[in-house]
Image 1 (cartoon, rainbow, N blue to C red):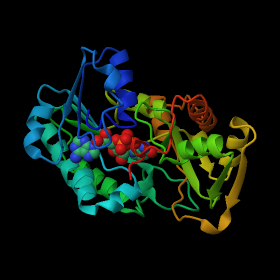
Image 2: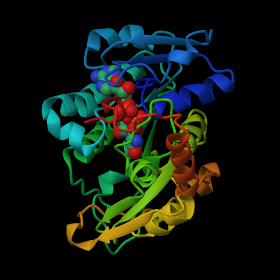
Image 3: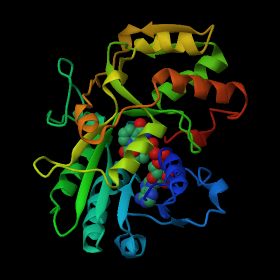
Length: 317
Ligand SMILES: NC(=O)c1ccc[n+]([C@@H]2O[C@H](COP(=O)([O-])OP(=O)(O)OC[C@H]3O[C@@H](n4cnc5c(N)ncnc54)[C@H](O)[C@@H]3O)[C@@H](O)[C@H]2O)c1
């Protein structure tokens, strides 16, 4: 797995170890390795610090590996805008090179972490896997180009790629991120007792980090149809929210919080997504809802399990 020390990776590593898998993590440790420190004693886990932009490292990364889950990336619009060349190399060119090397090395399945933000704007539609991509940021563009590059690699001779487009993730992780909307609002609600939501009418599909990890585990052997591209949105139809809906969720799960909606500062990115395909073909449904995530993050902050949500290590940029 690449990016295994990250927000999603450090949850996924634990799920894979629990089911008895052998896991090799390759990660540049851009945000530290604290998400994996308590797993040092795990016999089924090896952790290597390496940079996927170095193609010479690919041979060693892939040796003896049957399946790859590729999570390593410069994640988020802000982080990508800070160093555009690094974002393009990591999220696009090195990603496609790694997928090509994986096929050449005999990897059976290459699971790629993409994002529903490739849809960009779909004000009047509910978007599905066939909807046109309209990426509105460099981050979304690099993920979309990586998808195209991976789809060009022939899916034959035992090689299969799977592209999962995640909704916006939330929830507790050993490598916590507070630069994600739900997590940020939950910690602010606890610490300041008041929060502002900007815009409000934009749609977003939300998914709990543990459900994302469960979907990635399913992707290792789930059946794939040969008559359509191997792209699946990962989320649940019931978990599309307009951002103003978060007001009620916050008020329910953080009693006493004051939530204001600032309507002048609407952002263009809005997308409401259909998750029919993954439910129909893999039986995937979310096990957690946004309110559960707000509750668990709020509790971790309130009880001091996370002492300082402002710590730089919880932010990608
Ligand atoms: N979190 C979300 O809301 C979300 C939504 C959609 C898609 N995704 C995708 O999921 C994946 C994981 O996201 P995350 O939230 O866990 O991010 P994260 O920033 O917490 O983790 C990314 C990891 O990749 C590693 N990395 C970066 N560049 C590398 C390189 N060149 N070589 C090796 N490792 C490198 C970092 O050190 C980090 O540990 C990404 O591919 C992202 O595009 C995330």
